[in-house]
Image (tube, rainbow, N blue to C red; front, side, top):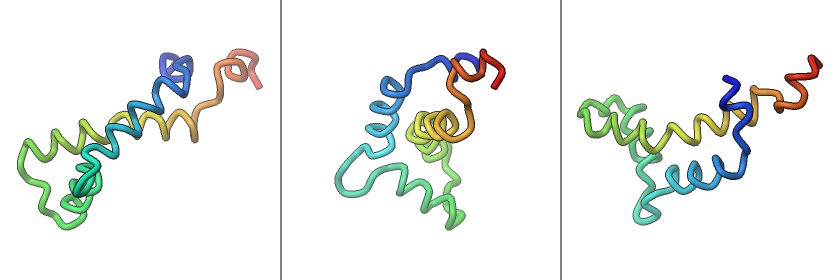
Length: 78
């Protein structure tokens, strides 16, 4: 996970937010696919791929922000 810890937040945040919200109209794919997942309708491979594509970067951003110490703190042993 060092590669994620060393990755700056802003170059990850912008594409993560854009992909999570794309397309902006009528409803973002991530919202649509998560709704399908919770309803049990996410069965087609293209829909599963779409969920992974739109959700991967935002998931990495959440992991980075919530669970990983910054690189400076991790290397100093605090």
